[in-house]
Length: 235
Ligand code: ATP
Image 1 (cartoon, rainbow, N blue to C red):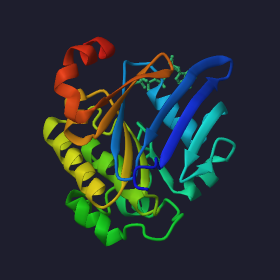
Image 2: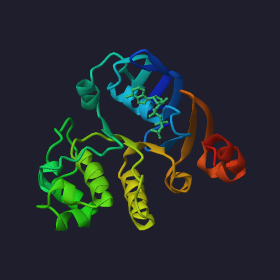
Image 3: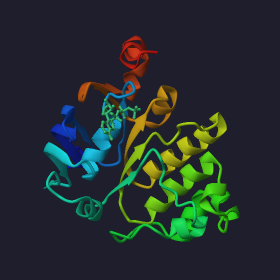
Image 4: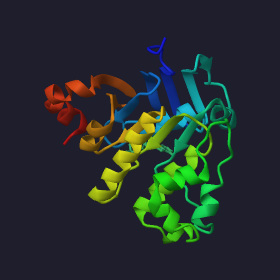
C-alpha cells in the first residue's frame, strides 16, 4: 500500500575510522513524504545521509529501499537503485560552466527531468548557463546542486542543509522548490538546522541526538512541541 515505507532505516550504525558515530539510527519515509532530520551540530545527521548513500566506509544495520536491502551495496549501486544525494558542500565544479555542471550526473533511471524542465524550475540558472561554477552566488550554487540531481531519474532525494548560509529570500525560493518537487512525486529527506524552514516544507521531523533518532514529531503537531524542540536543538 501507499503507507508502506519507501525507505526503512533500522539500527543503522556508522564509523569514521575508529570513531563510532551512529549508534542505531531508525526511521522510515513513506512515498511522497518530505521528512527532516533535526538536531544539534555533531548529532549525526550528515553521517546518517552518508551511511544511507554508502559513502561511509564502515556501517551496519539495515537500509531497505523499495523493499530491497542496500546496506552492503556500493554507492554506485545505491544511486542506481534511485537515491540521489546533495551534499552540504554542494559539489559544484568550479572549472566547469553551469551548463556543464548540470549535465554531469549520470542518468540512473528513466524519467529524470530534462535540461529544459530543470531550467524552467530555476530560471536564474538559465541566465547563468555559461558562467563558471564559482561565479555563482550561494543560492545559485544550491539551485544548481539540486537541479542537476533531478536529471538522474532518482525520485528519492537526500538533501544536506540546502538553506545553509543563504539569504531569507533565497531560502523561500528553495522552500518553494521543495514543495514543487513533492507535488511532482519526489520523496525527500532533508537535514536542517533552520527549524522554521523545516516546518514550512516537511510532513514529519525526526530528532537526531548522539547518533540515534530519539523522537518523531508530525508537522501538524509541531506547535504543541516547540519547547521540546528548543530543548533538543539547544536554542
Ligand atoms: P553538522 O550540522 O555539524 O554537520 P551533524 O548532525 O550532521 O552536524 P555529523 O556531521 O554527522 O553531524 O557528525 C557526527 C559526528 O561525527 C560528530 O562528532 C563529528 O565530529 C564526527 N565526524 C564528522 N565527520 C567526520 C570525519 N570525516 N571524520 C571523523 N569524524 C567525523
